[in-house]
Image (cartoon, rainbow, N blue to C red; front, side, top):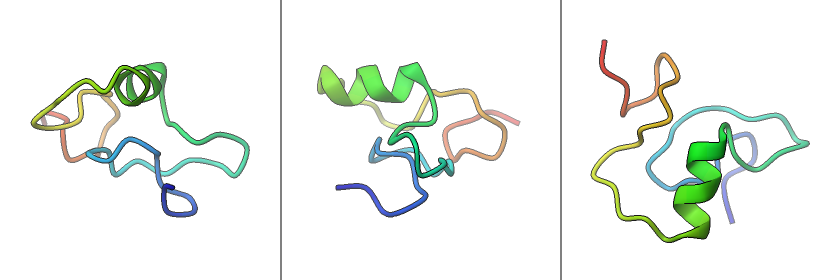
Length: 52
C-alpha cells in the first residue's frame, strides 16, 4: 500500500489527496498493468521522473 498522501505508483513522488491513490491515469495504468519504468513519466512538475 502507498504511503498516505503519496501516489500509489512506486516510482512517483507526487502527492495525492485522500480521495485517490494515484496522481494521474498514467500512474494508475502503469501499476495496474505492471509496466516496468526506470522513472515515473506522469509529467507533473517536481516529480522525480519529470524533465526540467
